[in-house]
Image 1 (spheres, helix red, strand yellow):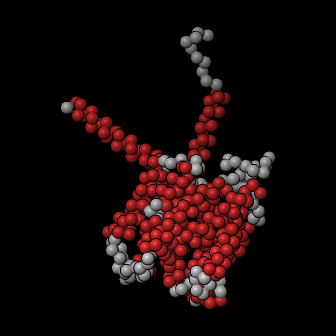
Image 2 (spheres, one colour; image 1 turned 90 degrees about the horizontal axis):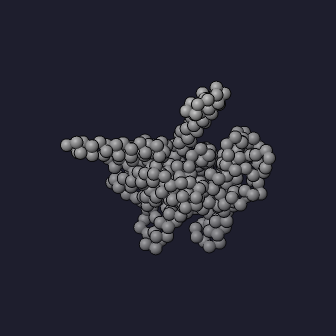
Image 3 (cartoon, rainbow, N blue to C red; image 1 turned 45 degrees about the vertical axis):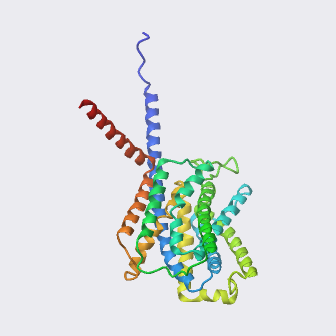
Length: 385
């Protein structure tokens, strides 16, 4: 055969290539569908937490101890989470010996960022707490990049900037009602702001540790399996959340003991007098909402979504809560709430951040490519002139 000619491709080879391309396209579509569902789950969870913000704020203003509220919430949530895990995922399995330290860390982080938020907002105010939500997405992206867990992409940077700008705009508008929180000494306020910043770090670290546990796979030939598709998950999403709540409860009980011994609150949070405000109808409604929706449904949705998207995307949806909370407050109390230009513009920026995060670097690349193309056309026209 002459060297310049080549033999036609084998039909079997062509069929194999076609099958591989079809399998790759099908896998890509499945991954895209899972990512879209994950963002939908995160949006539902953000809506749940927005309602929790309203109810919990009213409950804590009535003298309920944040630690007492959290202990009661954890106790009730653990029983429901393990029951739901058994119904959805089968009998919950105990963590493997190699993973127990990570589960303990997960529970400690869950309790730590909740306590940081509760004490931080008590030492500052609701406006300051909302402002610190601006930097949570960027904190998660930078922390994941520094630890080498997730790369820092253009889409993550842009979505973090848009979300931060949106929350700032929401707080820039005038308020129809002044913040009822009294003025506090500068030292206490600085301590509260430090705790609110640590809350953002704690949430980011929690999502990253949870992500590693969520993506572990069960391999038949070994006890520990890497993050590979093709094997069932080693731990279900609800099971991971239930195990985390056990560790969180232990930390909360320790915090309650320290609070009682140091007399940080009067009466102590777990005393009869400290628990009495929790039996009021408004407090019981807030606890029931926190247990059934925030803890069981909300955290389970976020745990499942963490299996299909980056941890930084989970934290981004914390910035969705301020505009959703504003909209819910407007629906619940149209007279006492305000919705103006700054609220609308802030909400639009936060929604744009979610869109950029959901579409990923492809959207950023198309926008940048379009900009470069227009600049190239302008240079050609200028040269022709």
